Image (tube, rainbow over all chains, first blue to last red; front, side, top):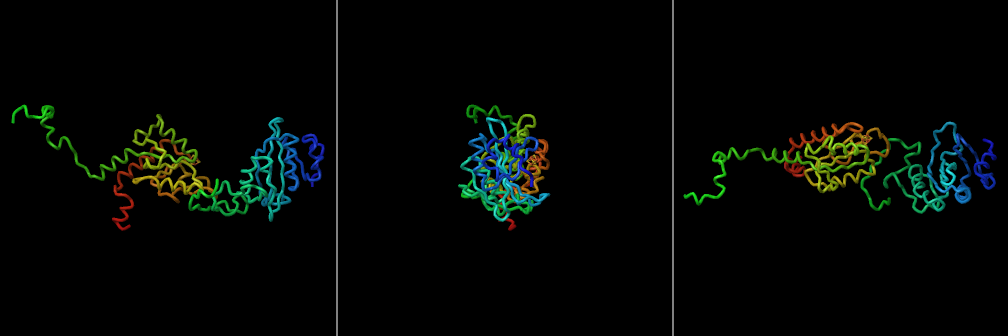
Length: 172
Length: 180
Ligand code: SF4
């Protein structure tokens, strides 16, 4: 495993390694794209810290990845990536957590960043990541009769599923 | 009969016009009805993607679809008789398209504009319907991604041709009459 570059982390995000140092798994700063991989258990706290203390005001995106066909193999099959942007400092940071294939679950952060609400529904819809504590975790892109999670690598790309009727009860 | 009792306009009528052959013509009812139908199509643009942008230029002055009598674009299915499906139709949109089609009054026609509407196009993937003929009966397919405005006009002319040749009884009743 990579040695954590604490100096880099400290210079970019002062105070972060102090607080979450033992839960940081990797840090990379590829061409200025700061990406921190952390333990899923501290994700919520880390986001709250970044928002309140380091002024990353906006959660730009939350998305999932399926690494099952990735070479070299990763530690777990799924990853969820949180993309933050600081308007006041004009810089970005990414937080990444790996989730277990059998139980891809993580705490919802809709109450930390309101924009997470729909992003998390999307990640649930397309990858089947469960966000615990989400107020309304239902499909957002695929139709209500859809079965499975189409962006998982084992879902066939031509797995069409016909929608019989538009149901207003299906929610947005 | 004296001059005074003639109707006032009588002197305006050319005696030759009194001959019925000079003031009327005969035709078959079907031809006459189809002629008026094909020259007054009221299109409904079901625009879901980029092809709809192409349709804008078809309607505006440069290409001017009103030369073919199809410029009265309606946004209510109840007021239109030709639905143009312009763009990608995802599976989730299928029932919506069908419902709009069902709201149109007979006679009605469908034009699938662009490869997306015709066959799914390059969206060979789980989310896109592989051709709208899975939910509505299509009369004319216009190929292209997007089709040129000339292509869309050509499609409308093809539809006019089809209307000329078609019957005027409603499709429902035609099935009843022929037992098919
Ligand atoms: S056929 Fe091409 S231009 Fe038309 S909607 Fe599809 S992608 Fe867009």
